[in-house]
Image 1: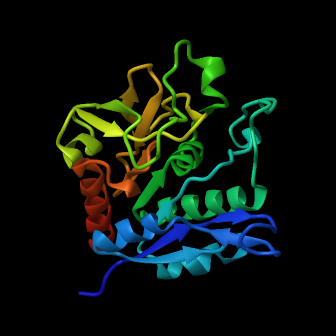
Image 2: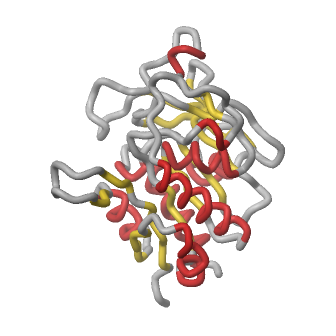
Length: 238
């Protein structure tokens, strides 16, 4: 059987570093993890007018992370916190393609900032800066390398995520200063850090709609590999 075609969102960078002109960026291990789980990844440029065309071809969507934030205007978050950095065209595209994928019941996996974007698409709000909102918060922007665990999360029994990873606790990496703030109708919280920060969400009304606040593409645990395999299994079951 042909491999499912997995659309993967890109980051966008201003001129400098790799090129003197604007450029797209994507860490290789996102694509490696999809390939290892049986998918054929394809990068999606930030063209909101092309969303319908992309969705005609892809079988599933991965919304990746990045060092930026969803504009609070998308979720009625009020004034921007001083730490908030936005990438407006990327967010406009990711919002549209994620909503379109869900409307067509295509599997969606949101990773780190991608989970936050997914949460907003599903009607949720975000904490704009964890240290200002959570007392005695963990170091969610971990000081050690991202290919090492930063803390653990408790996985809720009875959730789709729990059924996939088969454990009530996962060691995860952590590279974020924002997080989901609530559980709107249709959204289930499936993982939480010890300080109460929401680390995972899912929407059971859809075939596969899961967001995780960590970066499972680093495959720190077997649970990470199981998550990608489950996502690809859903993508293959057209």
